[in-house]
Image 1 (cartoon, rainbow, N blue to C red):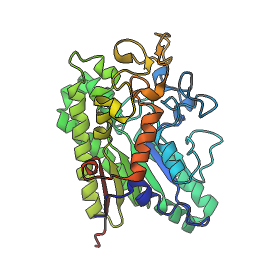
Image 2 (image 1 turned 45 degrees about the vertical axis):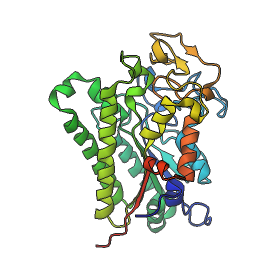
Image 3 (image 1 turned 90 degrees about the horizontal axis):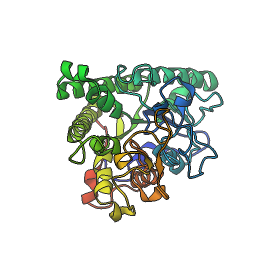
Image 4 (image 1 turned 90 degrees about the vertical axis):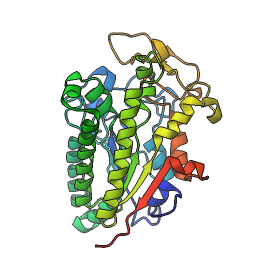
Length: 358
């Protein structure tokens, strides 16, 4: 086990900027937490698109990009700290894959049955990666392409939709599977995806744990007692299962390296004690309608076209009823960059580098 230092950027971006000949690239798989605009190019429901105002209102980007934020998202900051340009969405016709590509899709699940037909699921994202593999081999040749793939960082932020819509919002799925069985299905599919990427040469992985899902404004609006604890329990079960899987993969696979970040605990502290971290509001969404701003509109549905918008998104933990503000994305990216400074903070982060030899 390596020390708890510098997390994603030290482990995963260690070779960036070393030389022009040998640089790391950044591949991103996930859902709306890291979607830079892939859903702009697919047919989906309005709630799964953010290419309209007031998204992106802080002006960092000229126009709304499809990011579910008032501005940037965590992978934009991680790329910046790694001295990379903004990583483009895979489906952007003008995308340059030289520094990596983002396959994430709002509404996507680890399970293909989650929001089926409305998003780009993990299985399809992996197929898109195969196309990028071919592109790299054609551009660089097989030997150099393999080196790029092995030095690349594979960042994964996914699973929320499997539990919110795929399970809690699906009575039939609840009838078929107990919660622990369903978590096992989700983690099993994710494990298979990691094994597939490893088989293609991937060696460096970064993971964003699930947040306290039951404390999202939309779930809080449905719960008379504050956070919806059933959703939080599923998120915690998923996170614990994922940590166990990563530990096992670290023993099984030579040179399998990973960074696991506990976004659940980190965000929960800001929800409960916002003023301790420079926020004024940890419960209500900046953009939305109804209790806590928890009705998912923010201009994204034809059913309800009115919504309330706060004066200063930087004062809020939540941007809309599902997603945090740019400031949260930036703070967490900085936390990953700096690493835990105290023993207390170490519970928020884990990092492992497999050194086992066969």
